[in-house]
Length: 170
Image (cartoon, rainbow, N blue to C red; front, side, top):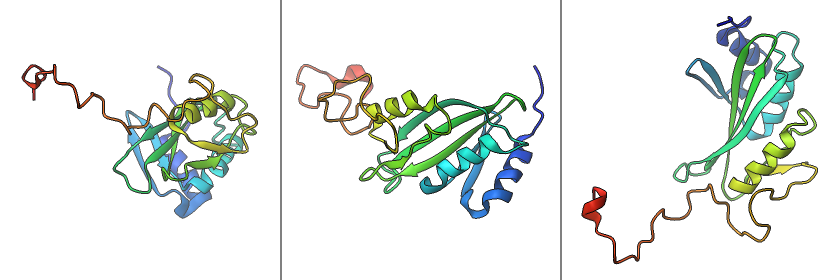
């Protein structure tokens, strides 16, 4: 296994020097650094990470979202996974959005590959990427009025009478 040319600590120091208080929180999961930034700064941070001479996050691995229904005002978490191929280091940039207005700036102008990732995230979670060139559903039906990955519906039909909870550990 090849070693990283830049450590998570060095990467965090670069980010904190450049963005100060905008790096609201940070932690490590399985050796990958996670940083939390305000939604209005996410695009700026992602752009900086790609363009910074020492960091060089040249590859966007994924854009995803998570729905936390009980986290009032921060129900939707958008996650950008970036990879510096030169430095062999990965990073997650995370931000939260309110469910009432899940809008964030598109990063398609920074990473062309973000196009379909943002469309998929919109399709399944309803995150609106402002400035996206063609934000429409790609996997679900156009007339579908809900976002299937949100935890807004019960997993089981509560009106079923043919179900005996004893067999389901309840």
